[in-house]
Amino acid sequence: MVDIRRISTNRWWHKKKNWVLFIFLLFLIFVRISRGSLYKDLYFLISKPFWPGQFQREVLTKSVEQESFVRLKQLEKDNKRLREILSLQRLSDSETISATVISRKTGSWWRQIILNKGSKDGVEVGSFVVGPGGLLGRVNNTSLFTSSVTLLTSPESKVGIWVERIQSHGLLVGLGNDHPKVIFYNKEVDIEVGDFVLSSPASTLLPPNIPIGIIQSVDAEFKAQKTANLLLLGKPQAIDWVQIVKVKI
Image: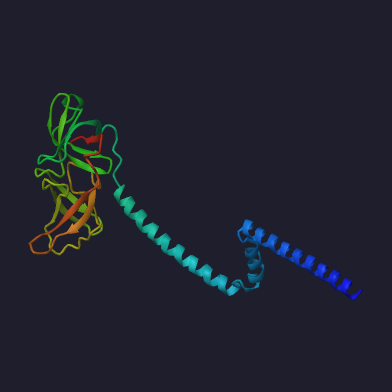
């Protein structure tokens, strides 16, 4: 009788043990299929009481506010600079002539573009040409149907300029490469990389504050004048249309 009970008890234990192993195996399969989501949910519930309290939230909120303040100041600074670039005065149709670029020599020594408007359209020698980005150059020759424009990068080009930040005049001289030179006759002028260069308000031929370029580098101070290299905003090698600003009488 005792042996029968032992055998029965052993069978029951073995059956229970098999069920435990089977349930454990199902649990492992579930964890595998759910990719540990159960553990993540358990961690969520267990760790919730230890989450940052009011003090920690205030510290984090203050940090976020400070970051936003810094970003806002930077955006205001960038917007101010962009407004300076885009301060080109709006010219009426009676002051300008729209034209298309039909030929260009932007990599040669002469550096010029040819437009599809000429003397029959009212284009005159001496008229300035403006494109997307800013000032490009000046008309040096016209035919009945076309006009030639000497670019600011040409060695023949000389234009009066104005730097708003330091309230100073200068002269922009082409060198035959992509970066014309800005000359300041006052050696003590406080020119810096990143300063915006505009058309001079003292000009009698060109409207003031037309964007021209940005100071790219300042030359070493070893001459009577201070000089700097300019990065032009207008890109004649990529521009297809322009505005010809009529000569003021």
